[in-house]
Length: 154
Image (cartoon, rainbow, N blue to C red; front, side, top):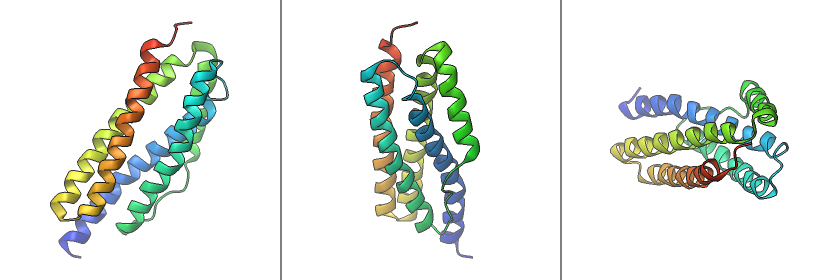
């Protein structure tokens, strides 16, 4: 096995964690939008959910390109998302949005690290893809941050 293949394998292992996080985030937005009462927040969650579909697909493509086999779904992540959404009925959406904000920020850092790794391997196009993913996650974090900061405490 070549050095490049070992590097790809290592990155695929890391990216599988990111993919599970993307699957979980999408599930949270999907379930949470069904329990929130604020119509504006519901619109934002719907948009995040739809973008999440594209993000999941993008990470799956990258994993395939690097020689890995991506997961399509995760029962545990979907079940946890449903539980968080149900909890939001009692606590309001703010604590769940704060969890989502933290996840978006973490994924933005991960994708940035993947981009640097891929640049070092000389894989510019894949690195650019990871940079785009990082920027998307940063933008999503800013949107969630505004809601977490400004959402009325119930």
